[in-house]
Image 1 (cartoon, one colour):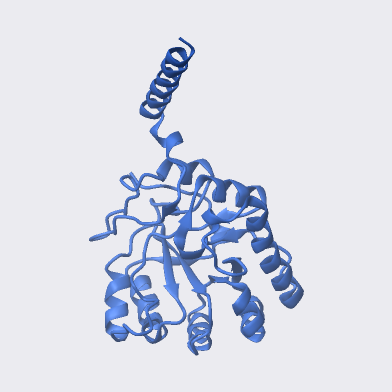
Image 2 (cartoon, one colour; image 1 turned 45 degrees about the vertical axis):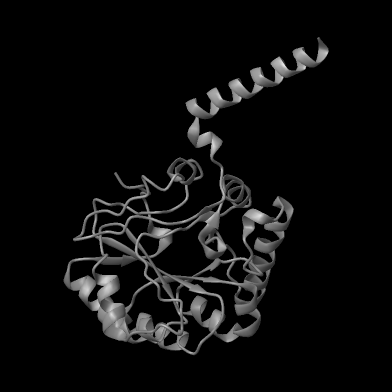
Length: 264
């Protein structure tokens, strides 16, 4: 009898859990997720409606898009290591008077202190990309905090930048817990709505390719992700900026983002 009762009790619990999952699918799916999106085509807005994580991104106030009623663009770069092209990128941004944010790892801060100082000195934001670039869904909450705090302390010590409030999760991998812990640590997670496979240094296809890939995806409120290891990006950046402005877009700093949106 006891075995039968225990078996019935187990079945009852399983049925209740199944019902809860059916009623609250977003709550049942907490990650991990690898950020992805349906790309913009012809100026239409990109979408994260089918990715399974939209509710989590919204709940924690993470950035996907800015104000989609305005032709504003946000330029963001990931800096895991230096490949010789960041000085050129900074030169172009300075010439064109475009603000940007650079998400740096611990390796980058230690290896390229002068470039990190230059970023801040020239008016750009420096964001957190973690100390060791781990999959943060596979480490503890305390380890997440340590990863972030080490970068913040080192950048502040190096540059005097008092605040570090933006985070890009390494590899774009995240979970409800990663967003919650980092938000509690004072960070806004920054994803993106324009990107292409620019990070593979063995698959560079020329400045024209980079230009076409980025310009074809431009849309109001876009957050553009580029990697500074790309030779193509460094060569195409000036033309991308000029074409975007020709189309009526304005480049803004993330600190100027007044409205966050999440597509349709």
